Image (tube, rainbow, N blue to C red; front, side, top):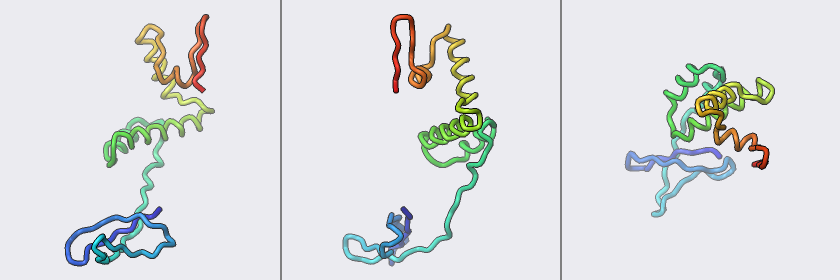
Length: 129
């Protein structure tokens, strides 16, 4: 849904209001005072078309990115999905990370790898699907 910006008529105070496109674009506060709508140019962020295999591009993008840690993790997941789609369903960066993790810990699997692929031993088989 689009966000519309309104300015208080006497103070330098702004508010963002989410409204549907079909609604009448008017905002009145609790006291019945009608705020003025502020018209701005549409903004579009097109910088997400970076190479998903380029570590430096990812660092540059997330270093200048405004947002939360969760936003960065979402962007990382998006890059992983792009790598999967380009490599037949396997993310080589994640696969390499899992192999290094296992090698450093005497063959122990990463918890996320176990969740994704399940766990199987001679006595037990666990599937998380």
